[in-house]
Image (cartoon, rainbow, N blue to C red; front, side):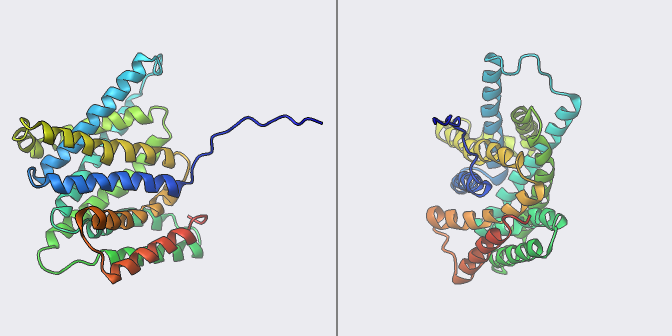
Length: 290
């Protein structure tokens, strides 16, 4: 008897795998941003990041229109308003964290910022095991967030502000991820976000407009920090709950610490290595619970 072969089906990678790809891309961009701080202020760097990402997404949308992929489809006013709000939240998150990492090590700033997704995950905790995994992750992040007392209060404050925007990004981004116009809403949001922060960053960007190198680095920054990770996160959010997605954010301080060590020579202490271990353990324990 000859059995019929099943058609090949592309398996969707585990959320943790995709999330790590997005995180590595995002914090490679963050490391590049730290280098750009030598010639641009944090606000100007953020505008260059969001603006270049908006340009890239606009080109992608134009190609989709040319190929007829959006023929006969119209985005609703509600979706448009949602995209605009999403863009303001994105730009606020990007700008705040840049002000923070200008004064704090990358891993520490992101760990403090994690208060945002932690609050989202805590609100959706379902049982004792998930609560325990979340508490373990919070402990690890708290260890990673340890900062020196002098000269860091401003950086911590901006990291907390970025965390509040991050919580909004998760909640609103989860809705957008389930929209048929997810890519278009991301592009519109990035454009609106760039306009929103232009009053505080445009003069800085214009001062380096005669430097092709800076503009090229800005495009790379937008691709690595916004276009690639946010599109991957849309795919993840379309398949898992916002609570589960929020819990995965604990991987970001770990990734940021590793990237900071490899590219910025920000060596983690033994205490921070313990924090990384706790976060990884928590993610493993809560994989099927949150």
